[in-house]
Structures are given as structure tokens and as C-alpha cells.
Image (cartoon, rainbow, N blue to C red; front, side, top):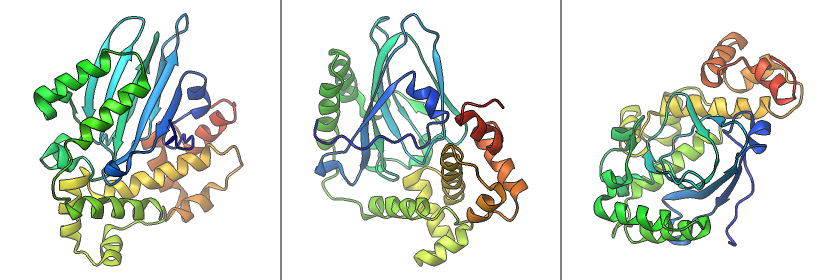
Length: 278
């Protein structure tokens, strides 16, 4: 497939161990879906004769639709996962693959037909959103063993359900989240709203309807994504300087936030990425 994207482990915690247990390929969406989908992805593993692997992910403000197929056991699991605000851990075992689509912030709103906040923190069956058509899609995807074919089926399914008239707020939501991601030192929602020329309450309503979480959560999460990536870089870091760069008033506050999001302190996490002990 010619639309393969560069490999990225952003948000995949303990990526060194993850690479030993599974392989992820990200695929750019076709032009028709570019305003709604960030990427399609295929995760493949073969852990036969090995212990199951539990993977922690530092989630972003994205909705995912996934189709998990355990090849040796024959089990399947289709689901739509709203934005996950808290810890997200997934366990894989035996042999299998996942075919998924990660929507841009705001990108799932036209397909859901309701505020994205209504599914935040929830997992739904594909049929719950797409009805009988969703069930038929699941049957087609699980009827084969070729992940590339499954991606093609998923693309065609979504293209056929694009809105006749694009909603400009979908693009607006995605652009605002992209702006937050590009400014990890951003701290205050009021500053973001002023920068955009939008009232704070209007910004909150937009995020509730299209993103699924508030702008404050998004700001804090992108700071943690940046911090986790820096900590995993393998270089010695000045934690007080990094805290200041990310807009924290002091290192202690930064350490508390990092520990709450990742589960260990930034220094301990960094040592683990270098193969050290906690």
C-alpha cells in the first residue's frame, strides 16, 4: 500500500518493550476522508508460546473504530471507543491483528450524529452506531484474514457515509486541537480562546460537541505526550527546565501530573526507557 506513514510511537508507553511484542503500521486516509480520518492502522502480533502483553497508551482526543481478530482462537471484537480520559491498557495474546481507524478530533461527529461527548469514556459496538450496515461490515472484515483488504473495506464504508454537505466545525475542531499540539507550553483555556478570537464558553461547547472532552483536558494531555516522548528519548533531562518549558510553575506540579498520567515519576520512566530499573 502506497500510503504508509512514517513509524511513530508517540503515546505508546514503554515503546522499546512494545516493539518486541507487536508491529503497528499507519496508513494515510484517501483524499475523500482526509478531513475526517487521521490515519488507518494495522497492529499485528504473534505471541504463541509467550506470555500475554499488556500495553499502556497515553491517549489523545481521538475516537477509534477497531476490529480485533484472534487468528488462533478465532475470537473477534469490533468496537468503537470514545475518547479515553484516564488510563488505557490493552492486552494481546496468542496470534492476531487489529484493523482500526483513528478519527481526527471532530471527525467522528458526522458519522455519530450526536455530540462526541456522549461516547467519551465508553465502548460501543459497531452496530450501535451504524446499525445493520455495521453488522454487515463486521462480517466482511472478519470473513477474511488480510488486514490490507480490511482497510479497503473500512475506507469504502466510511466514504459511502460522508455527509452531503461538509460541516465547517469539523475542520475547526481539528485545527484547534492541532494548534494545541503544536504549543505544549500552552497552559490556560482563556489564553487559547483569546488567541483564537473565540469566547471560552463557545470553545467549551465546540469541544463538547465535536471533540468529546474539554480544551483543558486536551491542553494537559498534549503536555504529557510531549513530556513522555522527551523522557523516552534516552538523553539526560533537566526536569525543572522541562517543567518550565511546558508551562509549569514548578517541577513538583509537573511530576504530579506526569505520575498521574503515566503511573510512575518522569525520572523513573526515563530510567526504564534506558533499560534501567525504577
